[in-house]
Image (cartoon, each protein chain N blue to C red):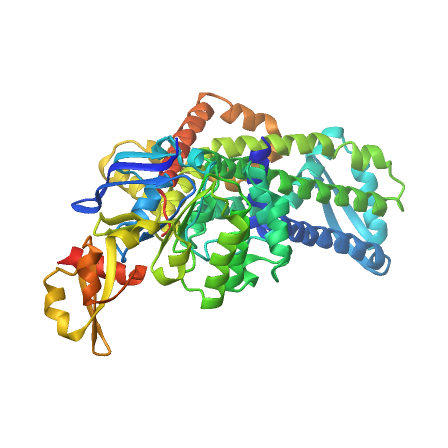
Length: 312
Length: 285
């Protein structure tokens, strides 16, 4: 086990900038925009007069304000109105906010994982360092497995930690800025945000989508372990050719559906908006098992090519 | 069991081309073997077969097991340096130490750190910040700190300047060699390792053309600087190699009794480099 831990650490060392620094930078930028946005309201709100009709809409309730007031007091009124909303409405609204703020991180995560897998069994053949790695008593299976676990668990866990930090910042900043107004903090901002539940949801979402897309991840690994040059061209090219062949000669769309079904979810973090339940329902079934099985078949292929691999 | 490597009918084909053609040899425990041959002779194929890095036909035993059973099993008792500059450029020196300590039971971190302390390499540096010579020092320090039964060096000093090459072999002999571990070195630069070797294997076009302990060379081979008037007589004894320099002819004889040769001129043991040229020209004929 200790041996496997060091293999995982090796992956982090090699990819420190995209695994560690990049999510911290993205999370910091998100936090900066939140803080500066709310800060600007706090500082400037008193001096801005608003004279307008504002439609305030949340779920089923629509209210129209006739405003002739400072922006600051408007925010206060908005908050008070929000605190009187039904529980479900508050939850939905905050759900959207907390998810939206994680979106840039999740999207970055997906791109980082794909890029990482593309290079993971290719780069060391290109720079010949494969000869060093192969001089160590680590089996090709263990090597490939360490890349899979890194992509499925380690990197998502790091990005999730950044999401959690970002959520805490949002919670803290929104709490601090609401202190000046007469609203019950717990029932308005804390309870409906339900961040602990949210974290569990995100964690299982990341894991399940990872498993669901395992055929794609593992296909990338196969190409990475085999391609002599431009792995990205193979990764995109071969599935495209398959889809084209199917379109020309086939009568069904199974290939196309399978391929798009197992790639698209990577870029649809919005799925989470309805909670984790529907996602479970959608993919926790035989299809997920088939996906995992196909993933393992590709992983076996990657191990096979890795065992034959030499410097390029 | 004193044989570290035993090859019997080792053959490696790429399509019709035979990189190794029915090769037989054994490597004894504690020996330092020079595997010497021109480019494309089959050196790398031989080494890769021993290391379990490639498929082959025939029989091959490395430390009593078939390397085809798995490279990672071989690597528990065998280590290799493929050539310089294969350490990943992003790797930090301290990370390299952590990594090998984590995956290799035979690694002594203290030993590696002690060796590195004598160089200008600091643990915080990355491989890409080191000069080519320093990368070799690092690689050697890492590998020499692993206790294994067989060390394989494939062109370990290629592209290094003479100072580093010399230091490399000095370190290999002084810090490492203990008559327990066996070493196989393949190289072009025969002259530099001549004094180091205990056994010679010449390979050409997939065949072993010479397999001899260094100590036996003097028994089998003799170089004569032939007196000009005796050239014809010397030719009659079938020299395997004739070289002309500064108006003098020097000839190398194989398995010719010294009593025949002594009257012809000065006798001495040919250098490995001259022997190499002699044997390979003969093989090419």
